[in-house]
Image (cartoon, rainbow, N blue to C red):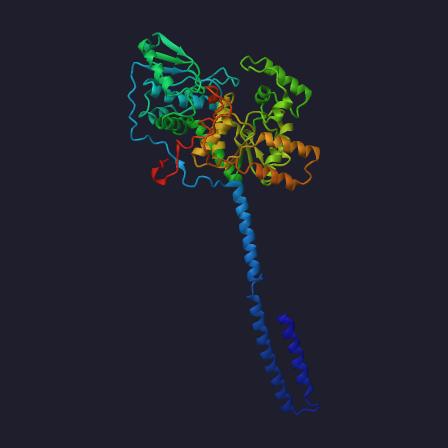
Length: 515
């Protein structure tokens, strides 16, 4: 407007000047008029240029507009951070130092405990941590445990293939004496073979010390869930944490590849979700979940379940299982869930799991919503994975490392892996872990399928509200459901390794441990 106004003034001034010029002019008068017009033009040009310069220095947007734009950008940044960043830790830090009453290990060199672990990777890991505590309670030397080679995965890996043995022994030398193998002169002595009772406390193992009167070696046939979750001395609970989170480090080759793959994920997008998509054949068969499967697939799973001896329940109603929330979410349901939480389609998702039942065809139900999905086989080279081929526990350890280090961890089903990763992430600062409310989600998905939910915004609002308190915030460890009494209640308590708060997590900066 300033330019237009000045141009108009220029025209008016010029025309008014020409109006008073006489028709006949002498050469001197013409020269004077020319000089006058020239000076007037120069003056107008200077004034015009000044306005132009002033316009160039004027912001494109007003101060108020820029302030509003800044607030919008801040809001977007806060919204993005809400998706990825956990704000739960506050002053909470890992806290596993022994108390002042804790004494250094003084195990009897004539008492040994040998252990045969059972189950998959994380079942064995937590079992080993329990057995370290049991050896401490019973004042015995622990022999490096034997790993399960007959589980579903048929993995022949030994302890040294999975874990860093020298680090394990030296890290716990103030707690328990640990030897790589039973001394030769003890190999043929009579030994007590024990199935220690599940979820046992201090008094149980203190009573078990009477076995040392007749035996010098106690062989533990199973390691899983041999210690109670609650009501144990603080030093025993912290010993369990020191063992699992500090001493029981994976072997150097596993650690190296796991960290290398984490770096590759970070370089791709900076942030990623680790999705424990528990949609493998064994899980579906064990739970009897067949929703969305063909008749042939359902029959294949039924036959597998009936032919697996140690699976006690053979006949399962798949519909009842799903409605009760006992089934793992399908790839399609997981995709809908993550989308409803507000994650964009460009989100990088790492699938921490074995072979998905139905392969790429079924996985496409997820990738159609989130194309940026990767697995070990696409993230690592063939040469890098060759050393781990045929060793399911070792590849599961790589998944474990990637899951613990992820920005967000989402398990599609609650199992040993999901619980172990959740507990480790809580220990490291309550990193964002979103645990799906499967029972609630199934009800929502069914409404969506039947057309009762018409707007995508309604679905998103429902899902976000449903999971507002299911993202890994500090909380007291859960007890058994009401109405369950006696020892049966111990089975339903929340696992200590799923939530080691408060014994292994301090809320005082002064008492925090050094990494």
